Image: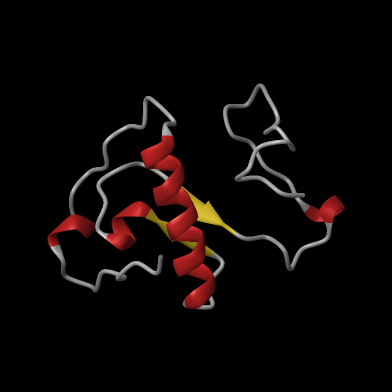
Length: 89
């Protein structure tokens, strides 16, 4: 589902986000909707606050980069799972 993208000046953009503690079906659906919204807007990244959610989550599409160009650090200890539905290499 395409979500409405918030605009400059909306309160949600000024509020601190809430930490995500559980990755459940509701969060999975939000992430999938954010990805669909990001692609619809022809973007490469989208934060939850940009779709009126106060959760600390973002999605990004690095499909334009070569696999060996990617450098990332999530927690400094582990690499994301390539089997995750939200990560595709």
